[in-house]
Length: 351
Image (cartoon, rainbow, N blue to C red; front, top):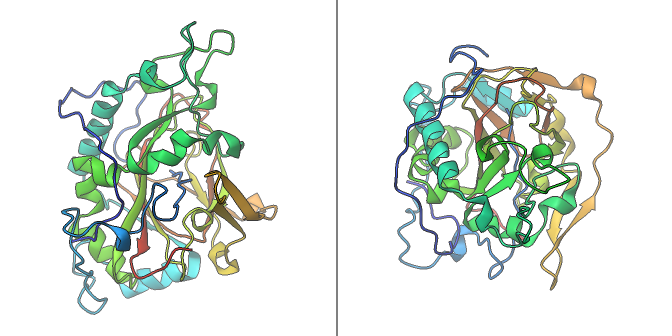
C-alpha cells in the first residue's frame, strides 16, 4: 500500500532465526528515544533515489495513496483524531502510547538480534593486520565520522555503526561483545528486513500519515538505535529536515520505543513549537567529490525549553521534520532500543 522507495543494490538477508539473548537489567515492559537519522539523500545515480526514479515494474509497492482524513476517522487503527492532529501541528511532536503492540515490539527486537548475530565486524573493509577493526563510528558531535563512503552507501543496505567508546584505543579492538558495542544499524531496514518492512508499511502507519495529509507516503530512511548501557552516545539537538530536505518540506519521523525510555538511559527530549522557526541548517551533497557539506548553522538551543519524553516500550513519538530534539548519553546499566523510520511525501521534490 506504499509506493516504492529506493533503488537498492543486491543485498542478501539472513533468513535464520536465533533465540533472543537475555539482556540484563532490562526494564519491565510497562512504564514510560530517540532516533538518529543522518541519512544523505543524493541525486539519481549516486546511491539514494526518490521513488519517482524507481524502475518500472518494481514490486517494491504500488502507488496507492493513504485514505483522506475524512476517510481515516479516529476509529481507523492508527488514524489520528482531529485533536491529535491539531496538537501535532501546534507542538511539532506527538506521543502515541501503545502504537506498537507487544508482538510487534518483540518481533522487532528479535529481528535486530538476528541481524546482529549475522554481522561479522571482521569483514569490514580496512581491518588492519594487527586485528584492529575499521571504526565505522556514528557520531553527532563529529560529522566527519558520519560522512564516509560506508555511511553514504548505507542508504541501500543494512549497515552497522559502532559507539565511539566501543573500542580500546591501544589495540583497536572492541572492549565488549559486538551486540553491546553498536550505536545503530540502517538505513534500509524498511525495505530489506521483512519485520521492519511490515511495520513501516502497515495499514495503521498508512492511516496515521493519511491523517496528516501525506498523499503518497514514501519511507526513505530507517534505523535501529541501540543506545547501549553506559556507552550509548548523545545525539545533539537537531532537525531531521536538515538531512531530509524536500520542496515542500514534508519529512515526518516515526520513532518507536522498543524498550522503556527514561532520563537515565537517554530518552528523547523535544522542544515544543520549535518547528515553527523553519530549517536552520541543511546537509548538501558536494558536486563531484560525493562528500557532504552543511549550509547554515544551528543557533545555541536553550536546553531548558526541551521536555523529556519518558515513554514505555511500544510508544510512538511522531516528529515534525523541523522539530528540534535530542537525546543525552545513556549513563545507566540498561539499554534503550528504538526503531526510527522517516517518510517524505512522494509528491515533494528533491533538489
